Image (cartoon, rainbow, N blue to C red; front, side, top):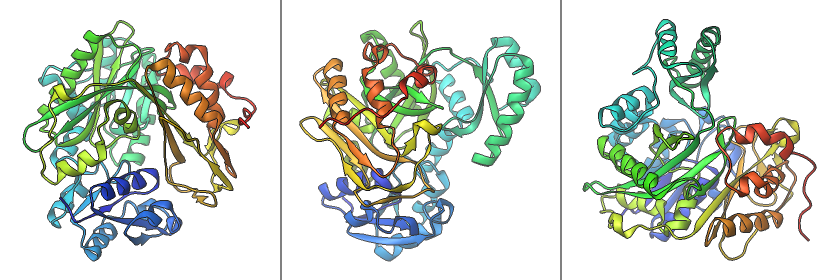
Length: 456
């Protein structure tokens, strides 16, 4: 096991990784930008190193500064968390060159799965279903020909994309021409690559992802699934484990496909295989996230397996110590992402000082956060404040428990999405599990309104 791990991230995920290190008896090094000098992850770490000014390009994406911090503190390994450099194959390779273990898969795996077109091609080769579309990157004439073949509507997607950037819907050839040009510009600006591909648009699908753990000794297991269909602007808002609509037969088929994906790319560590499931119960591979996911706590709650500690152990060369028969889900878990955003102002970011912070507590309630009362939320980073995760014996109990937890949540000084989540948890469609990836966008207007009163 490592003696010291540098955590190349910030916010709640940095806090989460530091806690896992401490439970393993490993010292943790935090890095911070000028904007995060007083952040919770800095306070919790055994050592902390400044890596530059507030903009992420000059700090959390500054590879030389992070490597220099690792050298100064004599770290053995780097945990990238999620976002920033977590899926950057160059960073993973440079860590290897510097004699540092990268707590994640091999650079070659990250690169292969980071290209959606390369990933689609590889999955098709091993028999994992993919959404009908172009086999790889295409130009506009090829996109038009493919759309005519598979039928409209189609999605234009960035090969190196994520988070909804470089993605457009086209319902006609004229739409497609406009969408192609716009997506190419956005993809080039966001990812440094204008490569695009086209696939059929699945109307009203569910977004279901399977958690994978794999070690360096050939063991691969799945830890069942999460439903991440509650999305706004293709950003996940709420997740649950398990998925309400999967039959046992479909769950088994998708789990086997997820294992096949991991084996095909010789995966090591924690990863997530993401699928879309259409209204007829057909599933399609869309991508693999080669890192820990924001929503990983729901899987931890239903399996009892600490994914971050497993990541660290596997990276250090330890065997997984799990067989598939050892993994079984118990109960149900729901996670709500609470952001510093103003729902009444088109969900614009709401930076500022948190003047009061009173998160919920109680049996089977977990809060992963990186802030505290008096903390100033920077304007330059993601708006996630915390994640509230609850467990219940079944979905009904988990949803009810989350509603009660959010009713007890108090936060002042910045706008938050608490009210939206409170209304969402009480919505009849959500309570019944009747939703899809476009459901929140269709219903967000009626879910907004004056803030619900906090329970006394």
